[in-house]
Length: 196
Image (tube, rainbow, N blue to C red; front, side, top):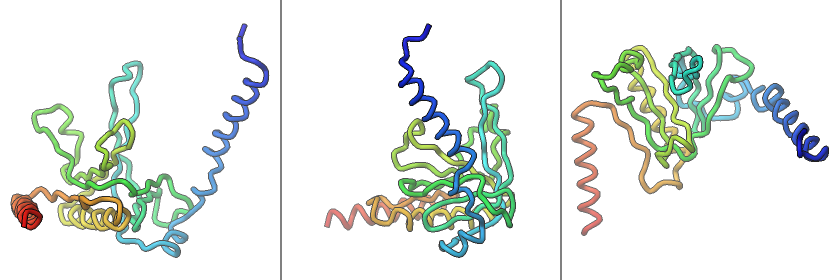
């Protein structure tokens, strides 16, 4: 026998129904590509693969990585992803508010997981650096030039979304030694200016 009162059970049931209703009839998800283009500034759009993880079998600690293809819109505030270019509702969306890092996924070539990561992968990380509270998003594209354009567009979106939030502006890591040297030079210049 349960110790729960009928009122408590009723409230839980009502809460559960509301959550289910939100899942299946979410009016916000009825926003299509045309609507977003009309209401928001789209900085970049095109096809990307997005990493989805799902638990496999009884081994709950084993992650199975799946890369699904989506049509992605990067706006000044959010990233939307759709099944195709003419979709009337999005599959997913996340706000860029609070996110300030876009970089290539660091791949350990000695790891067994390295084969599962595409070379031109993109990692979008929250400023807190705490993956238990804020999701880290992973995308990938086929070619280096395309990847570089996506990285720059997402960086621009991160700056616009978080303009007054961060004193440390969003970072981009293009992975080349020249970019790293330029970044180090800028940091040294800033620290020298602050001391003066």
